[in-house]
Length: 85
Image 1 (cartoon, rainbow, N blue to C red):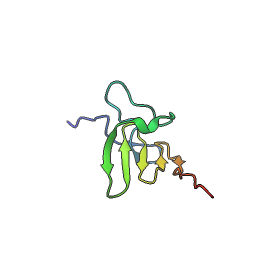
Image 2: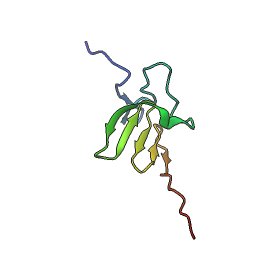
Image 3: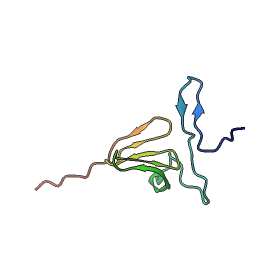
Image 4: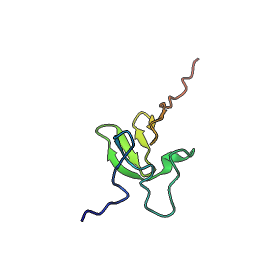
């Protein structure tokens, strides 16, 4: 008998496989992927050689500060303001 865990993937109605919206298993719960402080969630997988980390709220955080939300929405990288003389 195979046991399922919260980290298992789920098959959607279109037949695609995706992670659950939240992988957070600790207390207190981390901020959701839609909250303004979403980047404060714990890292569950880190691949610095590829430039990304998966947070427990399902957020993919990229090295250039771009983000991919669990529902597929993209948050563009934040670029520093350039000072002109």
